[in-house]
Length: 102
Image (tube, rainbow, N blue to C red; front, side, top):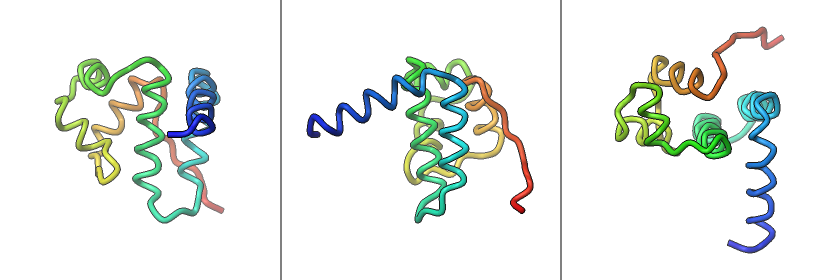
């Protein structure tokens, strides 16, 4: 990884420590029209957890989820159940919400 990529990730992680910024970031990822919206959102969740100083192991423990199951759920090919997603979001300081697309 080049220095520019490292600088970008370090800057992003620093910004994601701010809960409001992290929430806006996750919402923006969900709103994007991209090829893999689920994978991108799960990657965003992993970044937010990392910014908060949490490993997947710690997050699984705090959310009372199995470590291996959470690793699979949050992987790029993951497909977490609603309960898993709700628990992870709660541990990161967020909740699910629905809004009109219009």
